[in-house]
Image 1: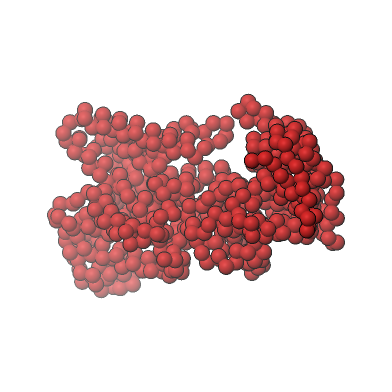
Image 2: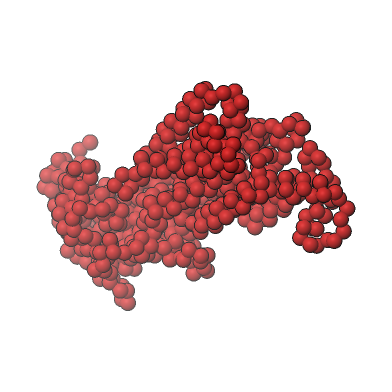
Length: 345
Length: 268
C-alpha cells in the first residue's frame, strides 16, 4: 500500500464533508428526535436565511442550546486531542506517544478530583474545568522542569519524567477516591470516564480561541516536524533548531490538551489512535497529517458522543468508554489489514 | 600540503578551526585542534576508535559547544550564525540516521532544501530541479517513489547523502560515508566525492578504511587521543612508522602492479 495514494486536498475535502454531515446528524438525533430537514431549517433560520417557522420553541432550544454546543465541544476536544497526539508522536518519534505524555491528563484528573472533593465544583460551573486545567499545566511544567538541566531537555528523560509524574498523580487521585464519600466517588468516577453532557456555549467560547490559536501556530511548524523525524543531528544540520521547536510545539500541544481535557474529562484513545489511522491514509508528512488529524479527531468524537447519547436511552454511556469500544476494534481491524503500513511505526 | 586549485570562477570559501578544545563529562575529548579547509579540498580524517574523529566532525558542524576556540566559516564564527545560515553552507551526513516514519524518498531528499526555503514558501521548480539532480548524482533517482522505511541501509545512506547535497553546501562533512556500502557503491560514492571536490566543494570525511583514505583522499588528518598528530598529503601522513605508533599495528604498503595504487596490508 502506498500511504501517499490519497491526495491531501481529497482527504481534507472528504473529512470536512463527512464532518458537516455527521455534525447535522448529531444535532438531529438524540433522546428527542428532530427530523433532519427541520434541524437544517432551524440552523438556516438562525442564520436569517429562512423566515418560516414550523417548529416548537422547545425544539429550537434543544438544537441550539443543548446539542449544538455539545457537538462543537466534541469537535474541539476530538480535533485538539488528535492533533496534539500527532504532534507528540512526531516530536518523540514514538508511536506510543499520546497527548497526555507530559502528565497533562493525569494532572488534570487530579485537579478535577480535588475540586470535587473540596466541594469547589459545586460553587461555580467553571471551578472544575479551572482546577483540571491548572492541574494539567502544573503536572506538565513539573515534568518539563525535572527533565531539563543546563538548558537541555533530553527526550528520554522527558518521557520517563512524564511517566513518573503521571503515576504519582494517578496514585494521589486513587488515594482521594478511596477516602471520599459514595456520592462524591460517583462524581469523580464520572469525570474520570469523560463526558460532554455539561457542554454549554460558555465552554465553547472558552475553548475555541485556545484550540484554534494553538492549532494555527502548530501548523506553521509542519516542515520542522517532518525534519525532526530524521533525527536530532540531521535536523540541526538541516537548519532546524530542534530544541526550540520541540519546546514551542510541546507547550502548544500541552496547552491545547489541558484546555480540552479540563472540559471533557479523561477521553482516552483519540490522540493515540486517530493520527495512526490517518497516517495510513495520507502518509507521515505533517502538512497533510495534522489538518487531517484535526478533522478526523473531531469526526470521531462527534460520532462517539452520539453513540454515548443514544446507546442506552434515556441514560448516557460515558464517552471514554465509547471511544475505546468504537475505536479499539476499528484500530485492530486496521492493524490486521494494513500491517505493513503500521510496522515502521 | 597539496591543495588542488578549485575550478575557475568558483569562489573560495574557508573553514577554520582555531585552538578547539572540547570536553564532555570531565573528559577532554578534543585537545587544541587547529585546521584550515578550503573549497575544493578532499580530506579524510583517520585515527583509532575513540580518537575523537566523529566528535571533531560534530564540532565543525556546530553541533557541540566547544569549551575553547572557535570554528569559523569564511571568517565568521559559527556561534554568530543562525542554524539555517549554517545549513546553507555546511552539511553533515551522520554515521547512522534511521527514520522510522514512512516518508517517500523524494520527500526525504526535498527536506534538504529546508535551509533555502522560507516558512511559508513551498518548493519551487528550482528546488525540485536541485532535488532531482541530487538524486541523480547519488544514483537514488530510481528509489524516488519508495518509502524510506523499505530501502536497505546502504540505500538509505545514499538517500541521506542526496539530502545533504540538496542543501547545496560549500562544505560537506561525512561520518564514515561508505560504512554500509558494497564495493560498487563505495566506488560510486568515492568518485562522487572526488567530483564534488573538483567542482569546488570542500569535502571532509571520517574514513576507517586506510587503503581507501590513502588511495582516494589527497589530504589526511590523523587524530590520536583528541589531537591532530599529522596533517598533510596522504602518503606522507600514513607512513608505516606512524601506523605502528598510532594504531599499534605492523602494516606494510604494497604497490598494485597494474594501477600503481598503494595497498595496505596488515596482519589479521
